[in-house]
Image (tube, rainbow, N blue to C red; front, side, top):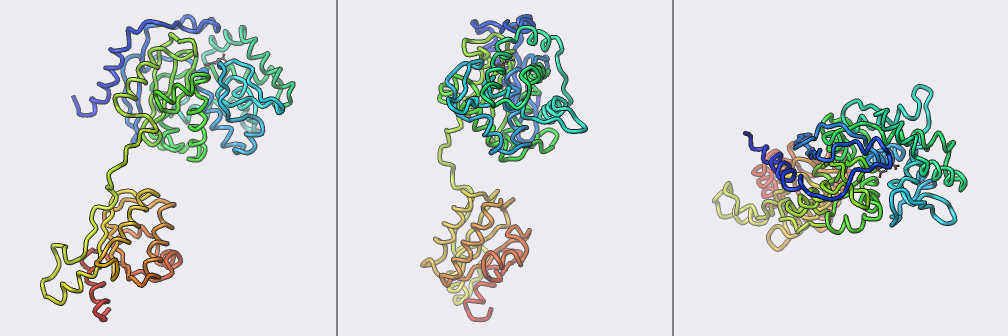
Length: 450
Ligand code: GLU
């Protein structure tokens, strides 16, 4: 037994705890779905490192149904862009059931892409290309999210085609308002096919993890959609993914999610994990009863609620000091005086907006009397993102305009090549390979030798 089995263990525990939960029944308005095994219960989690964990029937195939909607929304956003897609479909919670006639008064736009009306439109917006008909493109895209080639359950597709008059009626209604770009019969046929794509709970967790990981599939490492598209899809999942139960879901469980009538359910921890469950009995909102219970318990016990962000410890800046406090400081009196005037800020880890603010604050606070020289040591920094980089450049530029001399320890050129640093900070920032050398350089400069 390895250490990480602890993660599988928590999924197994959820399965044991909620596997006997009574209530709900499998959807049967699509007759083929009514044949599902009501006792099947699979759970899966995929981490941002692409590690896969599962319990129970995590490899049992079932059809995507509405869990397909966020991924098709992602695809159409990638193809057409947000502004064009927004002309056709809105982003407001409908407060209605999945199959309601939620069309905006005036424009006729469906409320959002998570309800059937909106999903029929987003699917219809995907154009055929010369080499690849629209549905092939959809299937291919879903496969990239899952990290493997997927196929269609023809029996479920036929079953829904034969009984899906309400969706057909919806499509005609949308067409009559001018917000359906293709023939209603064709649109619904494509939508039913997309709903009948076959997956497992492990596939769903990988798909969810791809949204969590900014559009990159963490298992295959392939970029499927941009980080911006993934963020927008998560926003719509958070507000609309659970239909008329979306507010309550966000309140209690606090994760962007999407349910499907075959019993699949995904939840996304942005930058953290993708979770999925499969259990066919559904409650009145069309959500898997056991899936909801298990995800609710996981969220509560592991503190996964999106809005639950207790102040993080200030781990970005590991040391703010003056150089004479450093163990390597030399002992001669005059040198100690000089070293006392050199502030040292040691940063670590990945520097983003929040971390950059901490570093800049520490730079201001550093050094005796907040004056003299300051060394920013980036030796233990792993990355500086595109937002943090100009912040650091500007902060270092401000220091020098305040008359302070700054130097950096940046052995991996995280602040960029010298030309970029010159452009960003307006100066040739002295760079050193070690903290000792940087302090020595600053002390010499203070003594007028540098
Ligand atoms: N194919 C189903 C329908 O349109 C999907 C609904 C759902 O999963 O919520 O009725």
